[in-house]
Length: 247
Ligand SMILES: Nc1nc2c(ncn2[C@@H]2O[C@H](COP(=O)(O)OP(=O)(O)OP(=O)(O)O)[C@@H](O)[C@H]2O)c(=O)[nH]1
Ligand SMILES: [Mg+2]
Image (tube, rainbow, N blue to C red):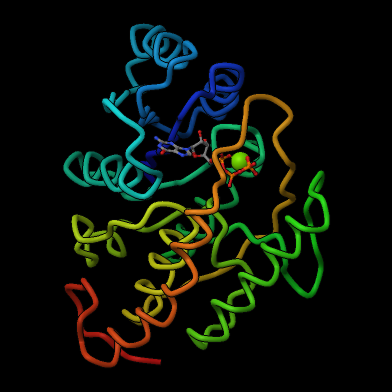
């Protein structure tokens, strides 16, 4: 399966070289780094990889434009170039690059979206979070899947793989959310099209290098989102090219 890994970066200078080394070591993936004007040398490091490896690419954006649009730009680039599978992964080692093949295997086995879940089967597989952060994530997921009536345990996870047909069926230019909201929104769209969504168990480890870009606005953006999606799904206003099956 021709797979493109989209790596969003904003000041990941201490992590990006290690991530790229581990991703490339699999020998299975092409890479698109979408960098949002990092000021810490991330861009320069990635440029070195671009010169040395035919399968590493970079989109250089001129401001911090948000995670969602970074992924969308990377996906659109890959769709134009015939990729069959599209992966998302954080560039801070919270997601273990060693887990990557399992996602592609799920898509190969027929999934249209494979989500790396920290909360499968009632467990909590997170290392390094304080209680407040854990509660926010756990409660946020229960909140979103209850309103959206899904069985998914980790809709906000950003470690995932999509099939080509799933991304082709979404009007990606219309997906404008930035953080957790982007992940929830995309998972819901794939479900609404009747495509197969599976969860893959992962262990999430809090970053040890670089700084978090989590902000209150990312949480605020996600709160009304499940309600908006539910309403739009009933009114037929989701940006999907395929018939919607409201849940
Ligand atoms: N291109 C781009 N990448 C971003 C932006 N915001 C965050 N990222 C990247 O998206 C990934 C996830 O962001 P993090 O800061 O790790 O957010 P988080 O995982 O919710 O927070 P932590 O758990 O504290 O790490 C990282 O690779 C970031 O560099 C953005 O606005 N643009
Ligand atoms: Mg992170």
